[in-house]
Image (cartoon, rainbow, N blue to C red; front, side, top):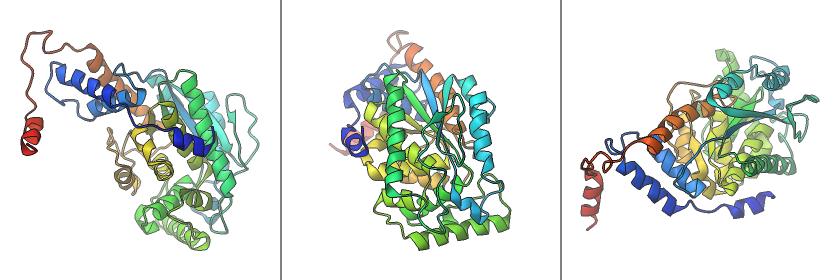
Length: 361
């Protein structure tokens, strides 16, 4: 399914399933709305999956690995060889995301969508669009057609997982320099000064942060990305990992599967996806608020409220994976808890709802 077909296939959530899930929560013998955002998440997933019998198992983490030419501007603490090293370590179970995914019962699937060297490694999906992007300070990061191909790769992989029976997909990435590209995309799409949305990433001294902001400013000035054209922004100052993740959001939405936003990079990709197709926003779940400066800013722009506030900024999909055990706890209550009628107790009254009804009568 190509990009335009995918966009046109995304439907509104199932209101009847959401209402049924909400009634189930209200019937459970506990204070109304006592589990807060967990209740909202389950109701949202019911609408996505078009059934009140909600499930987030089996679940998978798609990790898109790609290099970014902007590292030539001294915007990172390490060189881009680290991307290939970590990409290989995903196949060995030797990354933070691997350890967390195993504990949380999440299948981790690493994808080479643009690592700057050949990566013929068992267990690493070969979906390379090109050998890393160009240096955005010198010209466009990639061609528009390459950005579309990367988006369609993410769409295809998410839809493939849905066809295999996965009930939820988390998004992750690995690419030295990708907080720079994410900040560039965010600055353009939110019309913010780069200094407002740029952080230290995996760790930079003060002088490094100055170089990073300067590189973003020069890249935007040279390429003049059109904020009204998400593909133009993505291709000129974005990255292949961002494009793959954005495609996964679109593909998951088209297949009726919730897709979990990780942190700053994943949220920047989510913003691209929403600008391409606003309807896909309902299919996203925010896991946590990134410690990067634009973490909360992006969630606000996405209309998302994160469940976790842990000051995380590791990447790889670790925040998205961390959401699943918490969702499991909420679903255990949703599925197993006695109702008010079961224990012969009068249900709580939703005074807030009554007050709203009175104010509109």
